Length: 117
Image (cartoon, rainbow, N blue to C red; front, side, top):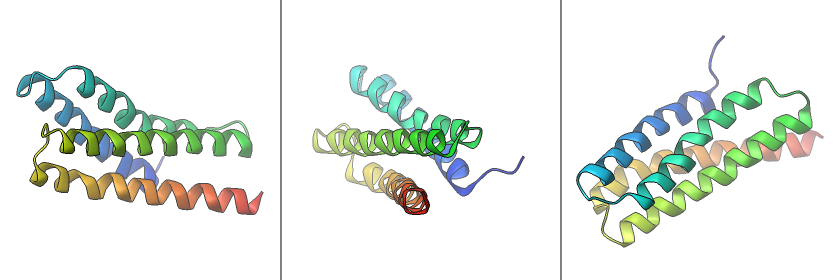
């Protein structure tokens, strides 16, 4: 089955988040925040995949709304890591556009579904 744009982009983001988490653990010896961002950043794509097989329109919207919350949380952790110097500006600026794009897709998708309900 063909992947949606959201599935592709959230999967690519999850790979970056996993690598970021590994970097934080290995290079910065930061374990708590690395696990937080790992959980939120990888759950976005998992929820998008779950939504594909939702039992109803309401279930679909619910899963995408949770994915939106997880994306927002991931952006929060990225900003926190940048402001506490665990991430350089260059590293942050490299990944920030990806999370912003996923957020925009999720916001647009949930608005469209709510409007059509």
